[in-house]
Length: 510
Ligand SMILES: [Zn+2]
Image 1 (tube, protein in one colour):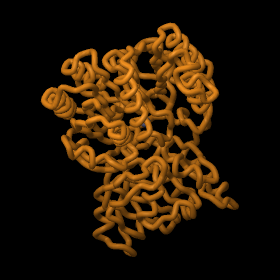
Image 2 (image 1 turned 135 degrees about the vertical axis):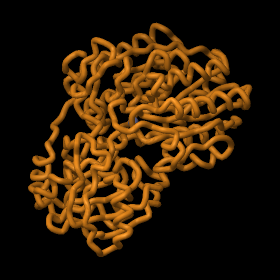
Image 3 (image 1 turned 30 degrees about the vertical axis):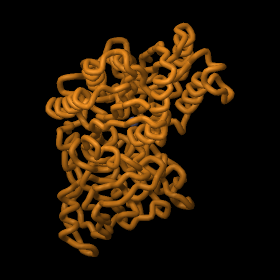
Image 4 (image 1 turned 90 degrees about the horizontal axis):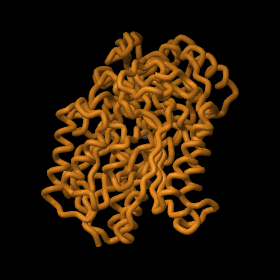
């Protein structure tokens, strides 16, 4: 039995987004638990599809003593404020000192956190934690798929284990894999050699989906390298390769080390280096394949109406740039206006984050008409609210549990919510009060909409929606409506990105 400290500090930072991550954002509950410190952590994260939940369960099953530090996450946005970063990092370091000594440390990290005063949030955090526990004990971190993995992060951790799916349906499973590796390292005590590579082109999020090629095939290759192929158990046929992580990166981050990277851990230096080269070469060989069609809102609305005639399942319009899961404000109205203009009868778009309008809908009451402008609360890119008469169809308190493969088990607290219908066009909107990605059907059912029976669904999500909505969709159109998560990184004014990186596959070099 070993004594293992566990903690987490999650943020995905879109440095180009308009809203910063303040301490209050980490302190509140939305889809994930609020900040929690000490013994209460174990119960607070249990049952969520998040890495620390899987790690804690797996460590306990192996008979280890789990000592909780603290855990928190905030919705993706711009920089983590210095105040928030220092508070959270400070408590993690303080508790690590106070509650030690430990045999090992597990951290639940995103990997794309940028603080106002540190562009490599995770590298700096792990450097400070190493300062407490020294260089010899295992320090293992799980990472999001959208990590911008830096050499500092590789240096200060013993190993890092990334998600292998986008939509991320393996978040808790990744925590579990990290715990299994930790257990293995504690038992066999052999040092791990690390082979790290960066790939010098940014990949737009929308083309990183593992339901699609080339990401699907590249992660199959990763599995093959790790296991030695043909389902062989690790160890015998894989030349001592212990673990492989590839993180395709989070482009909207103006930091030097933005972009895809990978790391191979193994007992044999030459084998690990060769495996890293093999995977990096395979990614580079697929550069041109990270691409697809993007629709304008007006084109998409007209096409969706056409396709919905005769279709038995919804036409899904992915509002990929206003994805709150990538720093979008989730209140832009480009797609809503296009659907209203095209009179896309029966279309429903969600979730539009507009707390004052949601409160006004509650005051108006179900069945009545609310006359006001909705959306564009932040006013990103000069957008203005959509003024109209809205029938308040249904209200909800925003408290419900996720049921899809991505948000399954998540205890949402995002209300009040409302379903509003513009009767002239037949277009409806789901309003909510907190920025959460439209990636679970329950968000619609909560206000009386059955997604599978809706002819056209507009979803403020880039890829995660596919986990729960692709199975019920006739087809999916990827729409470029205004939003702070710009699909083509060429449009971002990078200042810090290292020289020589292509801003998109086959794109111009910064
Ligand atoms: Zn992610």
